[in-house]
Image 1 (spheres, rainbow, N blue to C red):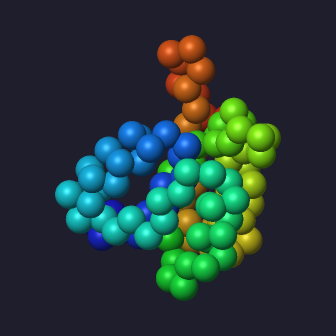
Image 2 (cartoon, rainbow, N blue to C red):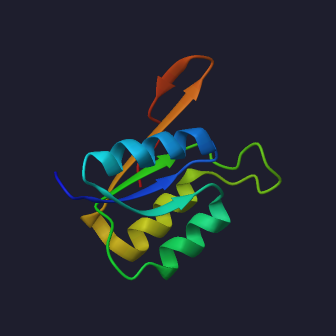
Length: 103
């Protein structure tokens, strides 16, 4: 897939920066770059074009006072875009990487 519209949803600024630079260099368009669940939901609602791919941190905001997670973002994405957006969720825990859920 070339020239994909991508959303990055992760609380680690370094991950978002590296991903944004890498995907931009490959010709993709970063339409959302959000670090919290509330910011993510707001950006999804405000977006006027569609997303092709969403990279969602499944543990997003679990370390903050919000105590919410990437599932809320996935639900908002499905509600707005249906099955047209591919949602990729990866979590790392103690050096192990696993996918956790689907919506």
